[in-house]
Length: 154
Image (cartoon, rainbow, N blue to C red; front, side):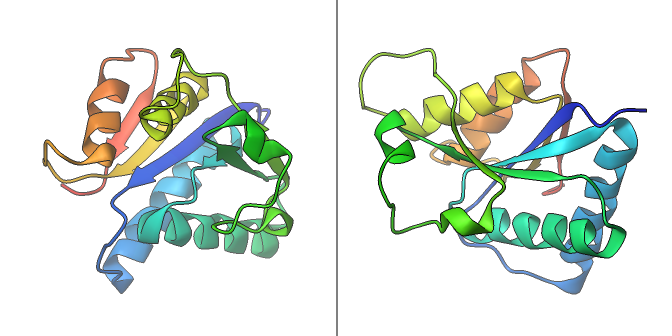
């Protein structure tokens, strides 16, 4: 089976990282690879994204997999300038996915929706909190019937 499918990650900015959570994330990422995912999208905000990035990187190094780590910027101008919250050298590609919106307001939410739309498999760590961007993205993803959506919060 080819590795032409895409997986993306969304979670809360501040989380308590435990060995049990690392194990659950690792198992889920291994499932995505078996499913055919070879490209992993990251938004780069917070503890959950960093933890998933670290695990994907470890799997890539240990298994010598053809895995591509893609940082998805929230605004096109970030493709052309240095941004303090991510290091381009850490990723295999930096990409701007054109969102379905016009204007700057809530650009991260719409970037997340665009990432989800391009993904086949989406992994969340999102508590049911109405003011949470991760939870709003989770609700958006659940409405996308052709996606595999997993929330590790539960």
